[in-house]
Length: 256
Image (cartoon, rainbow, N blue to C red; front, side, top):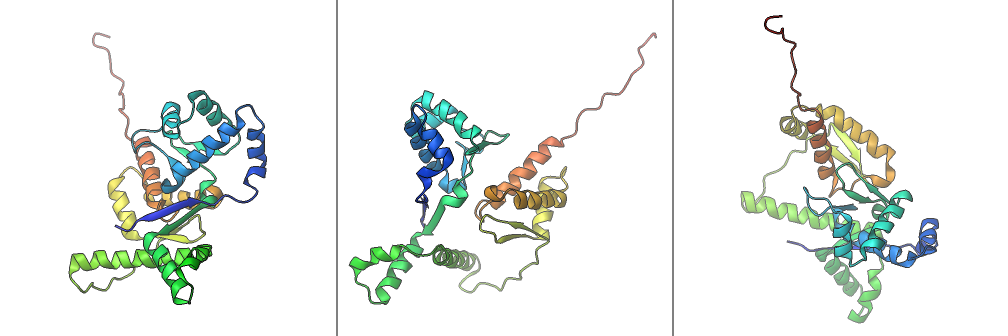
């Protein structure tokens, strides 16, 4: 399986931000900032979400352990980050790092190799390859998309033999905007599948709500990698809310 690398892109004025300056001026402020950076790094490959597992959320003691941070620093910092809007804690206790979408960079191993090969092909010596690593985000995204297409074709070929059958593209019924402003298409086949999985939910209506939510919450829009998890978590919560309750019927007391 192709490796994927993640990194945080801190702007030059990161430490001049109002919220960072406010925190840094506090007692233990530098410890809070270091803890915040560790949380950002921990969340980069989970679309900004922090959970120990699908069923177990992180508590403050667990966060202190994984970041090697004093528990009192952890408790105080989490309170400050929440009050300043730097993190958000969802109903299921998932911790969401609001800034990750703007800071995140990714590159597959093969995209890295192709970038280096490209540098060699244009006449640069190996010692100059490192300088080529400063490249546009658009170019990296193109490489990643190419790698994904190759992986998909390989999977299809392994399932159907050397020659993969042609695939018909189903037109989308609904499209959800992602963090890179591209649109994620939802087909009728997907809607039918979710309708079977979540029978108490009006799936089409909930998808329309998700469209509106993503339009309004520009900083919390999902990545192409994380959008399906976002949709299924949303539908699962709606299913749980709409479970039928036991109806108590009035009865006549015997001998009354």
